[in-house]
Image (cartoon, rainbow over all chains, first blue to last red; front, side, top):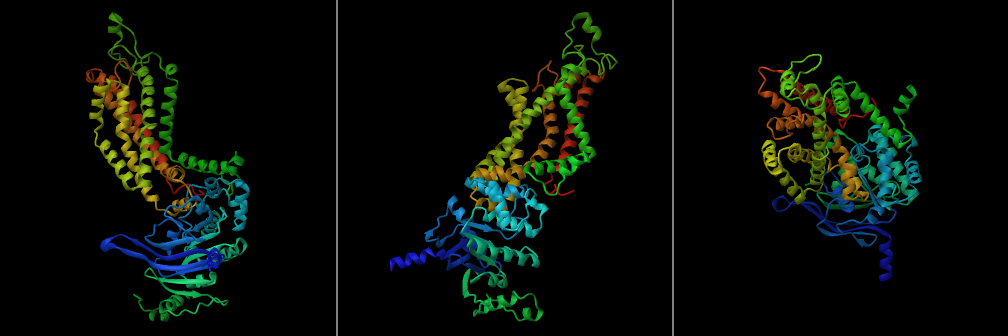
Length: 270
Length: 306
């Protein structure tokens, strides 16, 4: 029994157990995340969807150590995370931010952005690692000494992905990695992320408001609303998730684009 | 020349040095195209050169050393070919004194800009970055220093340390850092929640790396601009202290003190106070122009392709 449990735990990359995150206190108390639990198996891609303010990004930021949590537990490969993260944690878990226009330091060249994590962790062979990671994300070498403002949105997001990958993490937290990009670039970045997951056997936790993006990328989907987990879905090989909950069904419709007739039938799920 | 230019402006630099030199060149070009900034630059450079080569430029020393009948004959001479700016009550050549005085002005400016802004910068960024009780403590200390009037503090220091240039510089430095701390804190607050700082934190960067490597470079440009613009104020305060007899003491050719000496004779011998006054005016103007030009160059959103 115990041996079976350990074997099972070893395959679970991230285990969110009864997690609650509250902001403010007294009358202003906001339950951003309310008793949410899910498990992400290693090398899987797990999607977290919901509208703005549903608490999905808050979970991601809590996992990254940018927010503190109030209740429940977050386990990484079976180990509970403390409020203070160690350097070793950041070597294992990296994050890609939503807006590539805001997530790159405006005064640092691409070279400096990529060299910094190596300097922090005291890794050698900086030259080789930088050119390797730029190749992985298909970023031409000529961009290496440019500043972020000299790159397009898609190229910037590639830099952000490269920065996350240069420490060779096992888990990538993706916070709406494509929502700030235009549609044609979105597909490029999603394909890049899919390819990287195969090549580097990464585990993804992808947050998005777009059910279409998530079902394209993920094997499992958790739907959130008002800080609560509404539905857990498995995605089949056709990319269909067979949603049951009315909120998820509506989210599914919304991801198919703006349609006047469909929007007219929407109801408020409060 | 054209080769160098295309190397500097290369869209895809080959090395770290080329990227930063190219950026510096773009800044310099923008600066060069701004006529007021160039006027300021020329004035400040001239002041620097004048201070460095003061003993070679000044035709006579700080004091004439004349006494008795000779002193009576040579003092209060109006501007002439021999004495360009005339002579004062001790028969000293005013032009020579102004040239030598540029050193004192630069010493004051130099000491103040290498103490107050650096102290204020560190306190401001640390305060803004950490927030919480560190911010409260540091900002209340800043408020206390901000409440000191410069001249009154200088009076107190002159009483405690004795009159002299040192107490004037000390008084200026100690009353001017809070402004920089406030500025640096405000800038830090605008960027402390940004994604690129969160990203750096997620790389495992420590506090000092975040402050010195990420926050400080972004706050530096506005600080440089502010310091350059304040330079005129610092020179004026130093001159004001000299005028009140709290700064440099005669026969030190401090410009403010020279005006004070000339005050008694201003109706009969106008050149005594006029020329040091003009010197202060020109230098203060120069620093202001330079500061305005630097603001255009160092604007955080500048540095694009053209």
